[in-house]
Length: 185
Image (cartoon, helix red, strand yellow):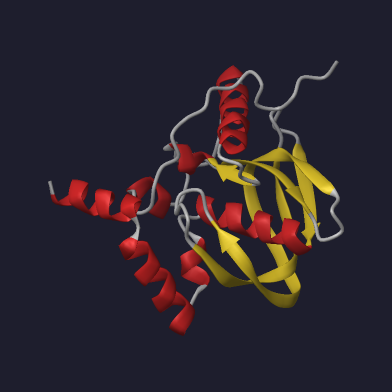
């Protein structure tokens, strides 16, 4: 019987915005070993514990180019996997505004523009090259997670009134106030 992703992993705390590891482009993975396998297991375990659909390594404090996903597309087809050293090579089609949130920005949601098709190239746990293509909500997930690895969050895609509302909601959140107090200490 195949093992359920994350069943052998450890749940880690999710790194909150604005920690520097979330704003810094992640390093390329060069060792395809048991530590990488354990990281992917931990990412799945943490993502499931937080009811997420994707999670990047820097969201648990590790600045490495790795993310996992368990995300449906708009036809409710489940996409389950991981990518090592992913690069978003195509994002096109129709630009769609859809509600987006982030485990590193708990409770914050905003209508965020994303392309409805995405193609990501990367590697698997063995170092073999892979391509993952997604449409609809899954394309949004692929763009969101590769954005994390490039040092961004979905707020970077907002402008005008949507950005102002998101910033105001963020400043009112308990997690943001706690991070601000800690930064001043």
